[in-house]
Image (cartoon, rainbow, N blue to C red; front, side, top):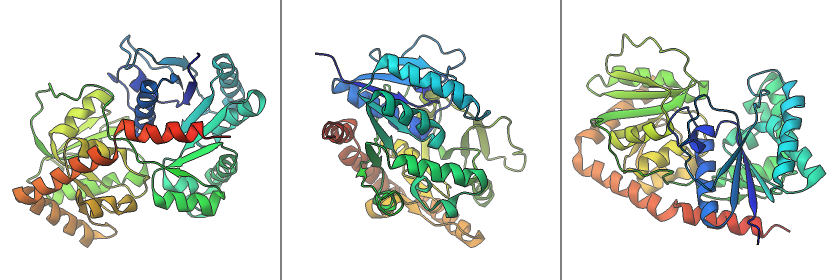
Length: 373
């Protein structure tokens, strides 16, 4: 009996396919790879569709996975490439004949060829919502041509066979904006590779991992470093083409882009993970920190109130300077109070072990896709 095939279309997932030794990958790609691992264990055949990775190497994360390469030049290049690479994607999918096509992030430009394939050749399109604004009021979150693309994406989303979301908040937005039901699933806290720590990295105070996107609010990291001069910060940043000027911040070590394997050691060796994002779904970085028993300090993002309710870190919404001073004070207090720190650390470990395993989450996905009419 032929295994059911799942096509995971994620332009930037190649670093996770090729052993995670180089290149950057975001939370959306990490979650798809973890889902792929779980579905592989359940007997599905997995094929990724991704951009080529320079110096990819031969190490593969899972020997049962396959990859099909497409340049996806309509991301970061002319949208006219959608006619070339988008059509090529349709024919690549046709050769693979997947029962299910899964995407997470990518918007209207990625969804358009997937819907075209589904219309012509069949298959079920499964969409995982990544960020709240994807399913929010486009007039609030977007401007100019991005608003048009966001509105188009939401129209496309109504045609998906199945929608998964991360939080109750997203679930309610989908009912309101998309007029569809979505299945809420937890993001996975798990490892793609052996999590044993063989590095020589010493324990340090605060770790921040993000990108150059404005909503990540990197400027708050700089301000906190000045408020906490006795603390050692390490910063990983995807998309950074040059090192920012940090001469005024001697307690910040800028790491730049860090490979998916290497970044695990920073989550393992930090004492606190710092989040400054203004917009998220459920941050994958929270789960990576909690997986190693590290509390988070978040400048406001607390999806579904999990951090506050489960007592896995500090929540201080930062909207003005006084808020930042309060957050700095709470971080300083946490790192000087061993009992409180251990309490939050234990809660973090307990939470991910109880609610976020690969088997538990992919069991829900497996059931939902098999229930499709």
